[in-house]
Image 1 (cartoon, helix red, strand yellow):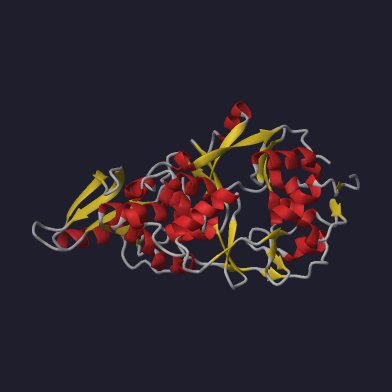
Image 2 (tube, each protein chain N blue to C red):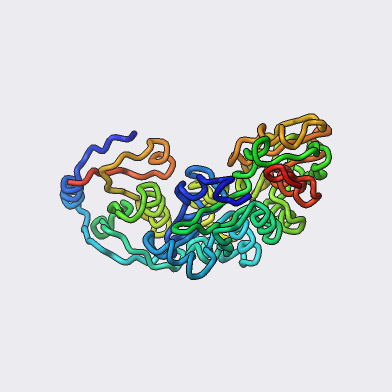
Length: 279
Length: 106
C-alpha cells in the first residue's frame, strides 16, 4: 500500500524544523517544546523542498546522536560541545520515492534502526514516523501476535547508577530505555536530554563542564510504563500507547517490555504483519 | 500569558537613565568560545556589580519560542540577563522557566 494512500496527512502536516547553525543547546531544548524526538535542519525555510529533491536526504537532529557525540567528547569540553551547531549532532534521513509503499518504509526503519523516513511526493514531501504506523493497526495493519510474542527482557539499573554508565548502557545494548530497578519507571534518551538541557543543569554545566553527566538515573525524570497482560494482541496494545508520549508497556510484573518499535517492527520482521490485507 | 509592561523605547531610555551603556548589534564571545550576535547589549557603568543585559529582537524567520530559547542560551553563555522584544504572547511558564523578561515593541 502506497504511503500517500495509507498516510496522506504525512504530506500536509508541518515538519518540525530548525535552521542550520542553530546551537545544540537551543535545538536540544526545542525538542521538549512540545516533546518530539527529532528536528530536521534546513538552510532556509524556502529551500527545503528543493534540497530534499536534489540530495535525496535530510539532516535530522535528535537525542540519540546528541548523546552518542557526548560519549566521544572529553568531559572538560561538554559545555563547549552544546554550543556547536546542531548539524554536528545530526544524522541523515533517506528520502523514499513518491511510489514508496509501507513495506519500503518498514524496510528503511529496519535498515537504519531509526523510526523516521522522508517520503517524496510530486510537489512536496513528508516525514513518516513509527508512531504514524501504530494507529494503522485495525485499519491498514493487522497481526495475530500477542505482546508476549514481541516483548524483550527489561534492562534495569539501580536508581543510583551514574548517568555516564546509563548512557553507555543505552548504546552498548542499542536500546532507548532503561528501567529503574524495583520500579515500573523507565528513563529514555529523551528524559536524559531533557535533564541535560534544563536551565538548572545548563547553569551547573557552565560552572563544572566535566560534571555535566555526574548525576544519577534517579535525578533524571522517568516515565511510568503501562502494565499490561501478555495476552493482549499487538493491535490492541497499539491503541494503549499514545503516539509521541514515549510510553511503553510492561508484562510479567515488569520483567519484559514492549515498545512502539516492537509493536510494529517485530511483526514485520517475523512476517506476521498484514498490510492492507496482505502478509 | 505574561504581560509586557514597558515598550522597547521606554525600556532603552530606562536603561540609559539607570547608567547602562547601550549598544546595538554587538558580537560577544561566550564562555563556550562561540561568538554570538546580540541585538542589544546594555552594560552597567564601570565598577558596578550589576549584570549586563542582552536583548533579543523578534527574528521574523523564527518562531518566538525558538527566539526566546536562543536568547536564553546566549545569555547563559555570556553571563547576562536575557530580555526579549515581541508583540506576540509567550506562555508564562516558558518565560518563567527560562528567566526571560519580555518587552513590547514600540
